Image (cartoon, rainbow, N blue to C red; front, top):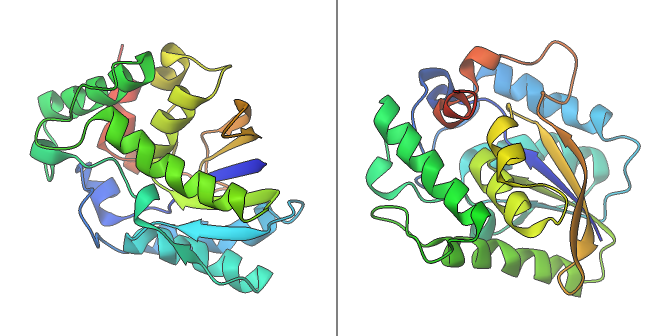
Amino acid sequence: MRLILVRHGQTKSNVRHIIDTATPGPGLTKLGRQQADALPAALAAEQVDAIYASTLVRTQQTAAPLCAARDLAPRVRAGIREIEAGDFEGKRDKTSVHDFVSTELSWVRGDLDRAMPGGQTGRETLARFDDVVAEAEAAGHSRVVFVSHGSMIRTWSGARASNVDVEFVYRNPLNNTGVVVLDGTMASGWTVLAWQDRAMGPGLDDEGASGAVADDSRLD
């Protein structure tokens, strides 16, 4: 199965560099809507059998133009929502952001029983995303789009793909509507085919407003 993981468009929380993972969350900014509108053309060459979005408003708004272009109803699933920030929810200070990123990277390294302070363990977080991937696979889809979240996409891809490691994940954050494409199955494992950290459309990046976690990922 070809799995196309798309980060949502820009939100005000991204602009303000706030860790924001609670449901339903904010909607898209003007730029975020433009980023979402660019997805149908950017993915025009891709066959798409189904489009999934998380329970957060921003992913459903991002998925809407692509769903309309493909005449597909979005499949909304809680399992692909953002990593739950726990005690870091609403924070923007460097220590909180660093500790959030350190926890997600520990999961990529395999320390899956470590918990986000006040939140889920890595095992629980990856398992809920796995469940939605398994659902799409069981439905017989060959090419699927998941509109999800930056930390969730990076962490799941880093933990499940055989050809990227924790250093790669750390050095390659996803800007809004960045895309990771993987090929594989739940039984055989996954391979990253493409990791595009820029917005899917010319002139639509706002790197300075890509979010608190992306900022930390670029720190040396």
